Image (cartoon, rainbow, N blue to C red; front, side, top):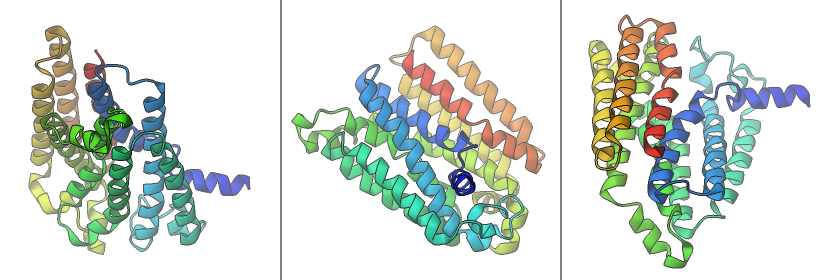
Length: 291
């Protein structure tokens, strides 16, 4: 049982929290914004645990979908499903249990958020297969990793106001801008991630933004980062204290410059280091919203 538990924890990337942190910070930033401050312990717990559970469930689906491809990629060849230590059926069962637990959390919010949760689940299931068909599957991941934003705005509306009010609150211009910023951020950091496996992906015919962008990959990543920064600056400018705004801008631009230094030579280890450090960018923007 101890060995099985260890394999399941490896399956859901328990020892690599960067993945769920990338999901968590924009969701919490949206939640703080939607509630105009601290959202209360109930919503904070629901969105934090829900993010961890759904990211873990997504890992299970992804590993089953990619098991034949991961076998030929140096970084992923020893994953539990790929190595045969955990069967596909086991992995899907673990993912289903985790998704069910997340669904139970959503049931404690409101109808509008429940509706959004079905869309989020569908995208989570479909995403692993996007890498077979789309030249820029990172854009699809950007949609999947942004679902917490409209869900946060819908969850902030009391159920007594009706599910229509909850959905309406998740279709505002502010939500649209946050979604755009998050999409650009995902395109940036997941292209860094794709650069790690580019040589292996070329051999097995996998489609990624790192392959599609070719020699313009580093330039495109910097562009995505700067759009992400500019859109957030526009969203925050009317409400943020000028001093906090300046400090935030310096911290974000400093991190973007550091990422450029890491990825400019396209070395595997440096690109992976840049990807893993991205949650600090999200954390910086979250703190800006809180302050």
